[in-house]
Length: 148
Length: 360
Image (cartoon, rainbow over all chains, first blue to last red; front, side, top):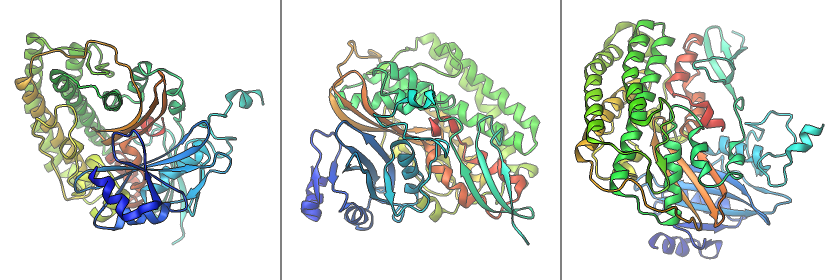
């Protein structure tokens, strides 16, 4: 894919391609995330001005944050994923780059417990403030709450 | 002047949906806003991972009532992308027809609520009466007044006979004249103008920064519509005229919605004219392989995005939907300050919030 080549050329080792994907998708390590994202947004070559979607996911051996960026001129979508450690899911917040990240990161924090370093107001959004645990995690048990 | 904080909501702020605002006011003027969400959080994101792929079509349709057709439609599109299913052409047109009929009903509802909030209840009744024509059409064609249950993987579950096509044409013709009448009232009536003009302004630059979508974006001069920019279903074969307003206020957003109703009427007529023959659905139950995909559609409120990941089993591994209201929600922080307390419900209605999809 043309987009993939351009990305490889610009970022080299910082990214790797996601296998078996229908749309262009890349892996980025969490250390490089902010640098790559800033380049994707600001550099004319990529021009991904819109953060269309941000979500977290909990899998058996790891957690990940999935970002979808959109180029408003040609409406191309790019998926950026970053892998997190299940025991300490923490990643840099993108709220400095996109206003739209603020509310979406709050949701990922609320439901999955992913901490976004540098977020201006990281508190729960859907569940009440005194809620214990993170409801969308695989190890979350509803019964534990009911038994109390 | 000192600042006070007053609660607005959670019950019946603008619609019968719960939302809670802590509004800081100086006298009559709003100076700050704190939004609290979560009153209808039902954990559906977790639930979809416990149901199988086919059950989820029914489940996603029940996310919310007004854009209920877009959810299963977008979900099916994501599945079709993963499995590489080619949807029959007739089904693509039928999807567009269902989509546009729901859009008319949804936008008319919002226009009615706007009239109700500014105290123009005779206009509210008038709009709801027109909407009834659309509701009747839905009931006759699909059997339901709200949830159409149209979509399935690889096509649609309804077909239009010649008789039904004639019926839809007749109903749509009945819509045209009263639509022009109410648009004239919304645009030119003194009282409506006095209450909506210059209220809840969202400048274009701010709109881009917050990434707002749908009629809210188009009301602020952003020419973005998924149906045109990245067409799905049969929208690549149909010309959609996107109406953009530069007023950036409540009035501009209302006009965009009303113009969209007229455009939807045209689109349905065009679809009925060009409806190709053929099957309406693929003839087997497909197997869904492992993969991940994203699908987009233009719901009445704006761009709806589905992110789906499957692992080859019959349950999705992750399904997340980003609904339009989610993006428009935060922009209230820009629209509200500087306006009068009495305009709060009006501004909230102008983004046409759908709390049920937003909080899932």
